[in-house]
Length: 213
Length: 325
Image (cartoon, rainbow over all chains, first blue to last red):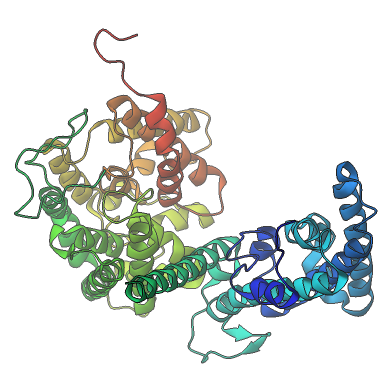
C-alpha cells in the first residue's frame, strides 16, 4: 500500500495546502449561501467541523467492516446521524441562527467535503489520523468561510459579528450581502489564493534550478 | 491564439487570421473608440446643457476613476498599458452618462472600478469581455446603493437646475401615471440619467455611429421592431393609458441604450442575423421589465441578459459558407 500521509501532514494539509474550499473547490454550496455574515459563517463551519470529526472517527473505527460497494451508503448514514444531532442542537440552543441557516444545516449531509474525507482518509487510516485530518479540514473550511464572510459583511453591512466597524458615513454595498456578492468575493479570493500558490511554486522551482549544478 | 496588438509599431503588417475577416486593419480599436466618442458628443453636450455642474461632476469622477482603474488592473496583469486605445475613456463616458446627476462621488468611482476590473480585466481585457463593462459597473452600484440610484435618487428639490428638481418621466408614470409630453422627451429637458433624457441627441449620435458602421444597424432595427410590436399591442389593448409606443421609444434610456450600449461590438453577436435576434431579444426584455417589473426602466438589465445569450446566438447563427450544406 502506498504511503499515506501521517497525522501531522493530514492536519497541516487541511488548513492551506489542501484547503477544502480554495484548493479542492468542495463544499461550495454553504460557502456561497451562508457567508453574508460572520456569525452565520462560523456557526456553519462549527456544525460542519463537528459532523466531520464524528463521521471521520466512526468511519475509521468501522473501516475494516466496510464492503466496497456499500461504503458510500454507510458514510451517508453516519453523516446523517451527526447532522441530525447538530441540527437539533442548533434549534434548541441557537434558535435564531438555526432559522437563519434554514435548509443549509440538513444539507450538510450531502456536503462533499465530509464524504471526501471519509473516502480519502478515514476509511483507510487509524482513528487518530482521521481525527487530526477532520480537525485540519474543518479549520481550513472555517478559515475559508470566515474570510469570505468578513469581506462581505464589512463591505455590505459595514459591520463584523453584527457590530458596526465602519464609520457612519460608509455607504453599505448592498450587493455584497446578496448572492452576487458571494460569487464576486469567492472568485476574487480564489484568484488571489491561486496567484499566491503559483508564485510560491515558481520561486521553489527557481531555487531548485539554482541549487542543481 | 495570441491577439495581435495593432497599436504596437513592431506588429506584423500582414495579419493572418482565420475567416471571417471582420476586422480590417483600418478599423482598429482606437478608431472605433474615437468614433464612439464623436457619436457621444451631442449626448454629452445636451447633458452639460441640461444638468450643468452635475454632468461635469459625473464625467470627471467616472473618467478619472476609469483611467485609474485601467492603469491599475493592466499593471496587475503585467501587460503593456492600454490607456491609448481609448476603451477606458469610452467606458467612463458611457458610465457617467448612465448615472443620475445627483449620485455621490463614490457611486461613480465604485462603478468605474467594477466596470474595468470585474467587467473587463478579469475576462482578459478589451475585446474579451462577456458583458458590457459600463453596464456591469452600473448594475453593481444600482443594486448596492438603491437610495442613490433608484428613481427617488434622481431628484433633489433644492437643486438650482430645473430638471433635477422634478421626478423622472419614467418614474412619474410608473408611480402616479403622469404622462410626460412628447416634446419634452424629444428635446430632453426632463430629469433622468445624464445622457438619456434627450432623444434628439441620442438619435444624432446614433445615426453617426450607424453611418460610420461603428454600430451595426441590425441591433437597433431588431430592437425597434420588438418595441413597436409589443408597445403597439399594449396600445391597442388599452393597457397604456396615454403612455404610447412613442413615449416608450423617446422616454427612458431606450435610445441611449440602443445606440451606445447594445451595439457594443464585443458583447453583441457577430453575424447580421445574430445581431437582429440580439436586438429583438433586448427589445422584448425591455418591454417586459417596463410593463411588469418593479423598476421603471429595464434597458440595463435587458442588455446584460442578452449579453449572456450572445455566445448561444453566435452558435445558432453560424452562416453556411457558399456551397456548404
